[in-house]
Amino acid sequence: MNDRTTPTVTVTIQVPSNAPEDVISRVTALGTELGAQGGIDQVLLDLVRTCHVCGCTDERACFGGCWWANDEGAADLCSSCADGPRQ
Ligand SMILES: [Zn+2]
Ligand SMILES: [Zn+2]
Image: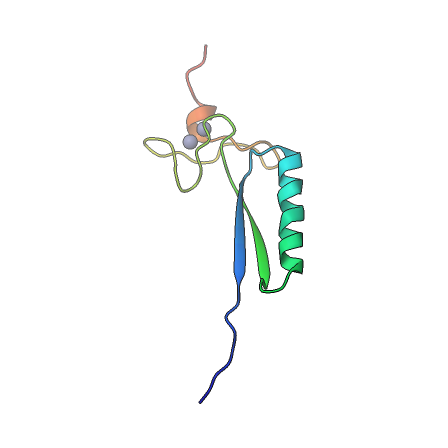
């Protein structure tokens, strides 16, 4: 048997969610451009939730662990920054 299926090429671009909007739109345009070229079947834009205060992500949480404390639609904020020491 000669199975000539070509592997699917998927490119994932990770963008921190706290990146400025113009950066996100530039990366989106880049992804569309990449997808229009041969050899790439799929371009995924992966918006990584990133705390806008300390920069932690799901993969790299704060020391001791944290969770997302922001309201939907608001800038990502983790629990350790949300209940940080109040001045
Ligand atoms: Zn944080
Ligand atoms: Zn955190």
